Image (cartoon, rainbow, N blue to C red; front, side, top):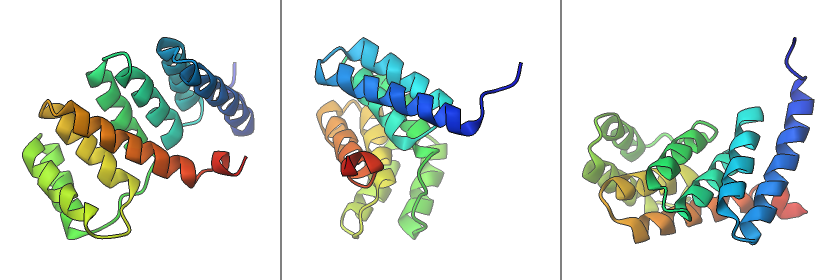
Length: 153
């Protein structure tokens, strides 16, 4: 059996993403998470994985949220700056305060990109600073959503 063509996967992923959004609006977080994860597996996008992260977050599944944030990072180019390079090296070493310092510097260096918010969110989760981590996650979601085709619909 062969895989469905990419455009069929993309169409199915889009449908699943829409279902995830509908479930999230109803605060049916488990269902939203499942739809977003399936969407991300079919056609990996930052929005699918960020939706899954938010749904997991709202269920108190913070480690799952952090994993979904990492998957979202795979779908987004990271701005090449000295701070980002330093932050990535610290991320590889699990130096969470260092990751926070590196990416927090980028918050003051417009344009602030989505990965800055996401790396901060993960670093803050790992430091048990959940309220601030959630704020960074939502900032990333809003930024990605605003630049997506869904913002035009």
